[in-house]
Amino acid sequence: MPLVEGGAVLRKALEGKYAVGQFNINNLEWTKSILLECEELKSPVILGVSEGAGKYMGGYNTVVGMVKGMMKDLNITIPVILHLDHGSYEGAKAAMEAGFSSVMFDGSHYPIDENLAKTREIVELAHSKGISVEAEVGSIGGEEDGVIGSGEVADPAEAKALVDTGIDFLAAGIGNIHGAYPENWKGLDMEVLQELQRTVGGVPMVLHGGTGIPAAMVQEAISYGISKVNVNTELQWAFAEEVRKYIEAGKDKEGKGFDPRKILAEPAAAIRRMVREKVEIFGSANKA
Image 1 (cartoon, helix red, strand yellow):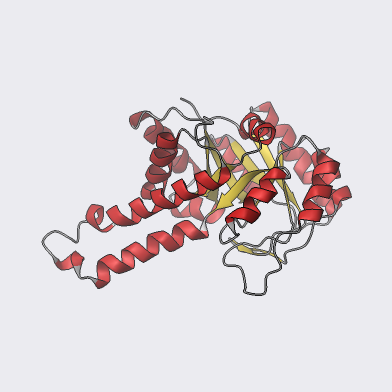
Image 2: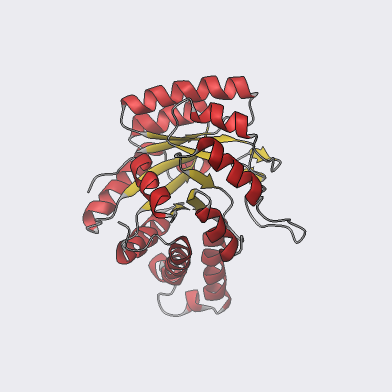
């Protein structure tokens, strides 16, 4: 099955009141674990790639080749969207050229008029290639590959203007942040989310910074129009914990325990467990 664009998949999720997980990938183990678990659960999936992760893996062409080859060799039948996460203007164009099926152009750090103009250009180019586009208004708190957001709450009028550029799904700040949430975090602003949905109704919305948000809060947000939830940090935590346990137990010094396939076996399994947990929360199992 070829890669698919994200618009139709997320509109179906919006109508069905569930969300599709974007699980960011960093290497072969990440990609394989996510694809196999979502295939087993019959859940559509979005493989997110930040610009930094893309460079780490060798470049966008390498990422596309790995994902497509793995989908073929593993007989993956579910809808798979390969999505550039928090892309720059040039990064989005490069990812499209390499064969990504979806891109995010993050112009939230620009003045709104410049964000709108650049987003409009990306949308025109992407749609001419059958590629979906995500854009952002009201920056997401925390840091994502050097793009730092203060956690603003999106202005509904600006959100509507961004939607009018023709984007397929919208990332809007509602008090969410990337990475770990501080103890004094006030939670997602559901009133703003509901106002945004009334303003841009019919366009799927995206929840960035999905790590650490209580499940009940995520599900409430889904009921108000969130159709895509991004998860990255929790996968990294789960992976790192299993690597730490393996090394601290000295297993790398037992027999051929130094074999990277042995070292990474439990970390990869931990990613699968985390993906399963999130898919169950998002309600996307058996929606492929």
